[in-house]
Amino acid sequence: MPAFYIVLNLNLNLNLNLHLNLQMNILEFISQPWHWSVSGLMIGLVMFLLIYFGERFGVSSSFKAICAIGGAGKWYDYFNYDWKKHDWLLTFIIGAIIGGGIGVGFLASPEPVQISAETIADLQALGVEAPKTNSDGMGFIPHDLFNFQALTSLKGFLFIVLGGFLIGFGTRYAGGCTSGHAITGLSNLQLPSLVAVIGFFIGGLVATFFLLPIILSL
Image (cartoon, rainbow, N blue to C red):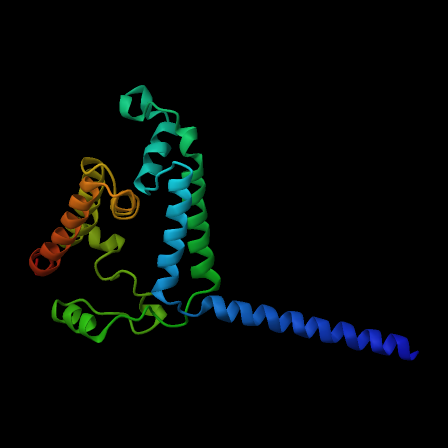
């Protein structure tokens, strides 16, 4: 074989190996836990762009657009609006779903999400076990409480059905969800959003230290 082809073959193999190593390094970098400040910086950048273009961000607004697309405006004037103005928000929601699927399917950690030892001890005191392996669950929600079988119990009904209703009702009654008020509203220095966010924290503390133990004891 001429020396030229030998050198060409070596170069191709070297470039292929470098490309594969680069891909592996990128995947390894992406799949590692990132510092929380990265998310904060990205959210801040997104909010700057939204304010600059005169838009507002809120995940619950996408449900309004979905209802409008489905024709709910025929029965309720609230949904009778030009949902195409929020097509970018629907794109964001679709992207979040696809990104979440890619993260879980291809970039997931081999271990459940890590939570503090104090939280695990507090949950165990309430009868809720944190998963030790991915076969027990990824740890984002306690599968002992949130599953289809739990719907047949009073405890599961309160958590899933009544809790879901209160989230939807509260979002509409408060004029926005946590992302709408805590991110968009506070970024625009809106006093109602500050009041809403304070209410979110107070409600969370009351639910955690008073309501949760009562419901789990049922």
